[in-house]
Image (cartoon, rainbow, N blue to C red; front, side, top):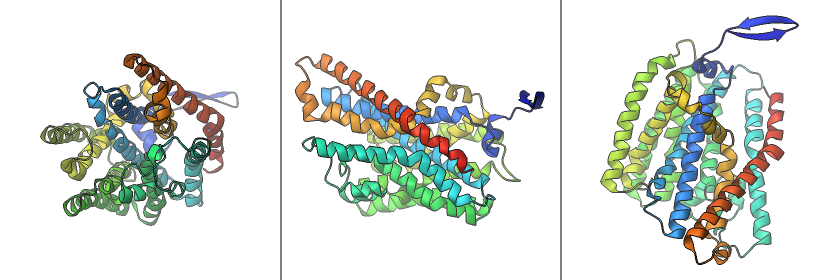
Length: 386
């Protein structure tokens, strides 16, 4: 029980288990912040490993970092889970669409468009940087980076290439609320299940008929299974005939084991840790998403949640959006610009350590600054749209 003060009286209210808090939207579930923290750490390790390994000739040491791309898939699954819960729980609200889109805009747009303004200023002040890519920045402003990359390939936006995943999420936000609003719970679950099945089939068809790996990886229809798996779980644990997350723990454990075996078998067979082998692009991505949705179950209704509730993971989870937006922009300049290379001395180890310190330090300055000076201020306005 928890005691709250109300008008001088002590009022006792029951504690709500973590999984019930998620279902009823009555509390903040710390373990989910931890999952978000794991996701961003994987992405940071991936890019840091690629930058340090590639720039300073240490590919073997940083080889395992190449598997950090799975962090993006974990973000997708978690986003599908949380967004669907918000949408389902607010279906009866008279301002359903207005509240949802305003709250999303307050969370996403300030940082996203600030980064684009920073890019505009950077282009103006430093036109010779050489890390911008050839595609028009206008596509970034309308969340179509993934479509352009599917046509032109990675590198189209240079240090802004990572915005492809933000484009996928935004495209999901534009479509999914209408599905949840228009259909009952079971109807929405059927749509989510169809998306889970359709995505690997679409990826396989494209892999068989073309050699366009970027399109397979970044187009929304190809990646909708990860978002839909999270959505399906969110709907399954809601409603009058909801499934108790505790009953899903054993299936989740088996899913983690079996999907991990599948992913490991793909890596061993292809000797490729990237997401771009044929097997990984087709059904491997679905296996990774199955691991992600199983981790959500375990974080809600098993002792595994204690791991995800660790303060360090939750700290990274809290600042994950800023970390994701800023790190490639800053790190490409620090590690891969001709300007940065010209400043390095002849001692490679010393240059690497200085570059690492600069990369981490500058990222923290940008992330903490953007959070405290801008993002948190906009988030205070979300209370107006409940």
